[in-house]
Image: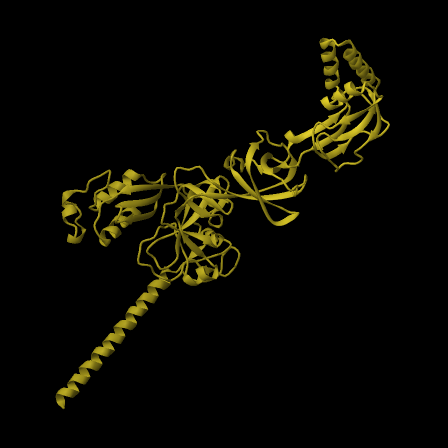
Length: 493
């Protein structure tokens, strides 16, 4: 019994000691968090103090600058750390950067136009007077060989008389000249043969259409006098038409002759038409800043009529050597010549973001090609980027409106073997003034850096890392420092 009572007393003593220690540790942790808390003014971010209160300038209540959450990975002094609650409230979403084939959606608008190579004009070749018209209004269809008018012409009357005289004289040269004269005045061989066979001349001559099509304009009235070159009708053959689109100058590099285009017609819903680009106007319209793009399309049923509205969507692949980094438009902030994104720091549960200057390539509509500044596999903010930037502005850190530093991105080969090496390498780089981000990849042995080139350089960073015991592509670590590393960190063979 005595032994049992003694054991109970020992257990109670240990429990009380543990609770006391735990409370003390919790109290110390809370105290540390309280001391780490910074308070600032939303209107005057230069005001900083370690306790809540009012702004000495505008008397507004101060707000906490940073959350009390702790992270297990070193962060840059320029990084923006948000609580999970704040990130959720601002609907901040991120996406992993990847490579894909850049495809741009082009939206073109235009109208149906007649094929200009199939437009004809029926003209008079002689002086005369229109006695009868067989075509009375625009829109009628004329067939080749059809009689379109009857004309009185003294010139044609005299030419018929000359033909009959040549027939009587049986002189081949005169006969040939008389026939050719009538042909030049657009009489057909059948009309000429009829005159020769009948031996009669007529003051009235039928005008025969030498081309077919739809009458687009009637230029003469019955009883009107005409002369050589007078236009009677304009005709258009609509069995093949042009779909003429207006393309903005920014879209022209993605279009070329021979590309197939599918388009819809407003007047014919549900039907899809297609054709190939036959011509791109080399001159821009100075007012609309567009160039005409011509697509040829067969129109055997004459469904497509001139001036119908048409719409086309073209998926144009950029002419690049391979896949490219493409990011959504919502991830980018523009300010003057700079383009900015916010990159999430890896290996942290707490949302930590770092601003970065990037160079953009062609626009893909809702996305952009990134020329430089981002690496495949990095995570960027794609929704809520303005909320992150506002937090950066409140903390007085580099942001869209405050480019305090010109960040340089570089990659340095650094040798290591384990997770301890990763921490040591990154801490050595971040320990230098001006280094804002350092991420080491153990598989590729590459250290991705972002630093202010005005404050440090890649050579200085390499020296610092080799001084910590890790060989780089520029410097070799001292043997004594290397041999002092833990056994799991020895990477030399």
